[in-house]
Length: 185
Image 1 (cartoon, rainbow, N blue to C red):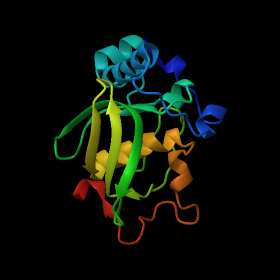
Image 2 (cartoon, one colour; image 1 turned 90 degrees about the horizontal axis):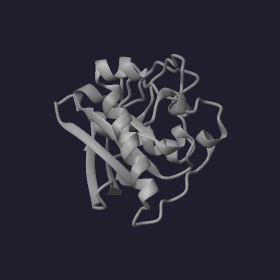
Image 3 (tube, rainbow, N blue to C red; image 1 turned 180 degrees about the vertical axis):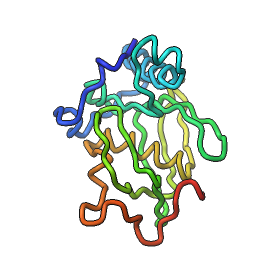
Image 4 (cartoon, one colour; image 1 turned 120 degrees about the vertical axis):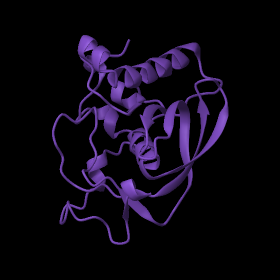
């Protein structure tokens, strides 16, 4: 079982590396790890389990965040339109994206960052992601708004990019021109 102690913090080398592709079909070890990552995210959102196991709530987790340089992510959340998303994904890749941008008005957080980082993180408003699910199925996910933001955040981890790398340092709290809040998409 993955706990907060397993999550590496900013400054760790693995968070700055481009993660390796997972060979498919995935090994039993990779499947088990990804299943545990998804379980962590789900359990972290359950108040009783989060308290019991000392889990910080999160909506996504990437393998580099547990010290593994592998292209695996787990996400579990409900978007602003009450649509649920729950995936363990191997080798997720953004195949296409919109020109239009979006952002979360309150900024983003990260399980690997134990401090408040104020600032608007510009993201693509719509993306198409191709990946292999935990069950071994190839999927193409068309995502928008909050769902697109969550997946971009986790995929960034696979490329050695932290959310705050996107913040405009000259004007951190100013939304990008022509961007729309994820709450409005």
